[in-house]
Length: 368
Image (cartoon, rainbow, N blue to C red; front, side):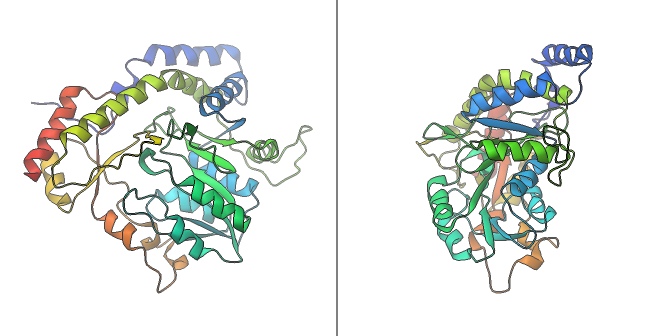
């Protein structure tokens, strides 16, 4: 029986780094330091250097990175934050966690990224921030969005959960706005073996606020000066992430090679392929095609034991948790149409060329 082609296989993903990870865990256990120790500091420094950022603050999860970023930027209950609806639930749930209101902007048809032209129409006296999502590994139009934010005195918080390694004109995702928020969930391009997240910023003031917020609001004297929480990367995850970061460049090269293989082989089929932007280095967290025959394609993939996904199957503004904030008469036509067409193909770096060719063969057969 032919083995399946999985969208993500953690066991295979760990094969080449297992011994290094075990050694890093032993190093932490031998140190006796478990929280906010040298591994966390080293990972923050190394990630900031990789991204070309001044400051990095590790937190407990990607969701927490968004919540703490919003709080550090002064967003409060009743304020509005403009974001998109074709994203993971945590993008909007982080906004709701502080009592703020998510306002959903439509996206551009070619990239499925936040449409700046739609954003400006949504700004009100209650708007405090714009929260673009660098979906699938492609950076949102940050020049236009930061220009809008500057004109209206708004904060910009980047959701970079898909964008480790993505660049625009050589500038790394997470360094365009006030704070860039990253997730290190195990399936991410840099994945922990549990939950972890991180905030990037160029502001010493914001970095200090984030450090206070992640640890009970403590200042240097362990006196709570703000209403903080418990949200920290533990030393074990930080040590594991240092190993992951070391191997990140080679993994990104492999993701890019897989994506280029798909782009070349799928030309001419009845699908829309990801757009190419010569100014960007795509992170290829997901390789997403669009097809009107999605059910037929997914049936063929299932029949041939090829993994697939939909990112994301349900628009946030249609979910019960967020629908009350979406006004009658509003519409997101591009978002809603794309949601019915998108399909994610396997693009994890552990995939072999032979496995990629199996994916291609199934698609060609299904769409001929």
